[in-house]
Amino acid sequence: PGDLDVLTLTDHEPAEPGPGEVTIRVRAAGMNPADYKHVAGGDPADFPKPVGYEVAGTVTAVGPGTDIVTGPVAEGDEVLAFRIAGGWATAVTVPAKDVLHRPEEIGVEQAANLLLAGSTAAEMLHVTGARPGETVLVHGASGAVGVSVLQQARVAGVHAIGTASETNHDVVRRYGGVPVTYGEGLEQRVRDVVAEQGWDGVDAALDCVGTDEALDVSLALVAKERLVT
Image 1 (cartoon, one colour):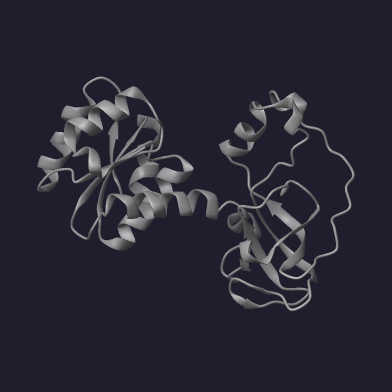
Image 2 (cartoon, rainbow, N blue to C red; image 1 turned 60 degrees about the vertical axis):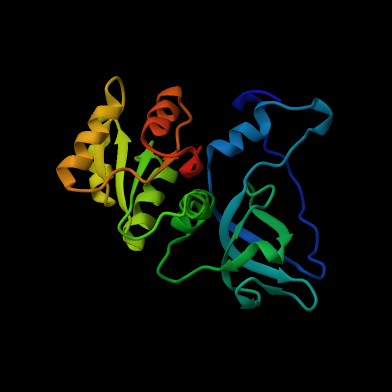
């Protein structure tokens, strides 16, 4: 366990895929805070640990009688895989249940960083029960999860207020949110935005940063049943 200096590149031959498995030549690997947290602590007896939860790449081998999430799969198919172990590699053999075809309109770099942040955002919106016409407060709206929340909220017809530093206000606007600067006085600034926009209030809050300020302001504005941290 430790900081980035504990990471070591080693040679490892991925196993031949069995039933329900595929081997992927990795073309891009996602990088997330969770990767660092995965090796930052824990019981030394559990190490070494492979790093990397999501990848995009090309299928090089398919286990007998195996389909992936999106249907039949063959060598040469372009795919992405999510919630796997050891994605920071040139090749990896993984469960087919964690693999799906990559849409042509999404590049490998985008695909490799899509699902961890995107599914987290989707689950946060789902848990709050945000509905069209409602307003959500998104703390840390210019980060990866926050940006995905803004995009998904816009598609769903949900208004979004996003906290960010002033230098990142344009990011919040670009993805459909109304920016507010975090820091002292945040609660009142959020209330002012609600009044300016003519909305009824803040219906739910999504905390993508985990600060005391985010929690306190959220509890002052929404019912605790509609707060996700």
